[in-house]
Every structure is written in structure tokens, then in C-alpha cells.
Length: 322
Image (cartoon, rainbow, N blue to C red):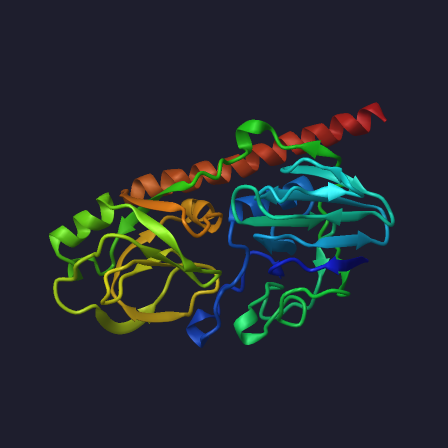
């Protein structure tokens, strides 16, 4: 069991999301940065899809009632174990009675804390993710608060050993974020000049940036006529452009449908970079083909497979030496 000593600014239980219910009006939710989330579970020896804690900007503090293997990935929130610094993108043991604490993120925005076995919360529509707007999933459908007790699940896949992620697997969180997009489905509702502006302009992450979507500020994107459409489905990464001409990138907690023209969609692997963006960061868009997007997705999946192989080999040799 884990006791929440300090909850942080916004800490929720998240997994891969509540897929399959958008047609009924239920948003997906789930981890914003899928790369950091999946690597955290790999480091902790968990199965794919195990629930973790997602912290935003300012992390919390957690007291462990028994010895646990945990991992920390994503933004560097200056994690300490009983006052001593522990490395980011690593797995390590927390002793019984140990307190793992986090501070403000030095770079990036979101940090993932995975515990071997996962976090035990009720399954709602096939997921344990928190969707706070409807108070669904996670810890009573809300962010953590002081005194919350978290029970450990049975999602452990491997025994897990303390380790640090190889450096070439660690992403950089720069203040200028380049996002690859597939144009459409309503790019024909914009002028040629508007599309050129979208692809060549630089946009700033506004203060209206949360799990639902990131509103960006910058050069105005011109519509050919109206900005409104008959509401249709909103995929993750959809770039809506309302009448004011400023793009909005829809993210994990997005509504299921929207009535603004969508000029493009950010490819899945690049959404992890945007999820780590902070107000004031610069965002640029670059068009890519379907083939290029699939190649990037295959590369991402291969990275997970490579990491799993590395960790399994490390575990085997650790067992042989013991």
C-alpha cells in the first residue's frame, strides 16, 4: 500500500485509455505521454497497459508501506528517496517506510511513476484511467488528494531489477517542438495561404493547455469560407482551427466530436513530445505522408521490443549471478 503524503498539482491514475466507447460519448483519457508511460511500465517489470501515476508540472510525495520496485520516467521532477536524489528514467527499490518525493519539473511537463504490480483501482469500461470531467475511473474519478491510500495490483510481468534506461532511449524535451502531421480531413476548407501559414509558422503553447487539448497562439490560419462543420469524430492529435484562426491540438481527454474544421492530425508518436510541452514553448508543424507516419510508428514499436529484450536479458543474467 502507498500513502499519498502530498498529491502534487495534478496527479491521476492513468493507463492506455478507455478505447471503444467514443461512439457512446465517452472520451478515451489515458496517459498523455504514451512513450514515457510505456517505458515506465517496462522498467517496473509490468505488463503492457498497467495503471501508473501521471503527475503534471509539480509532483507529489508518497510513503510506501512495504518494499517495492518502482520506476520514474518523463519530465525530470527532481525525484528524491528519503531525501537522496534518484535518477530519472530509472527503476529502483523503495524500502518499507520510504518516502518518494517529487518537485517542480525542470524540463517537460509530465512524469510517470510506475510500481511493480501496478495501481489497483476499479476497472470502468475496460480501463482504469481517470477522466476527471465526468468523475470516471482511477481514484473515484478525481486527482489524488492528501491521505489517499493506493493499493498495488497484480500487473507485474517480470520480477524487475533496479536499472537505468540506456541514454539513447531517453528523449529530449526542447522548448521548440516539431510535430509531423497528416493533412486533412478538412484541409480543403482552408486557403492555400492558410495551409502555407500552418506549415511554415511558429506557434506558442498558450496558458490554455491541459489534458483535453493545447490551444496555440501565432499567425492566423485563413479559412476559405466558414470554420464550422457538421460535428464529426475527433481523433487524438486532431488540429482544429476555429474562426479566430488559431490551432487547437486535441489530446487524451478530448471530447468525442467537434464542429470546427480539422486542418491536419498529429501522428501518434509525436504526441508524446507535445504532451511534455509547457506554456511558452514553440510548436512547428511539418506535413508527412501516410507511409512516413507508418514507418515512424513501426520504429516506435520496435524501440519497445528492443527495450523489453534488453531488460529480459539483464534479468536473466542477474538471476544467473545470484
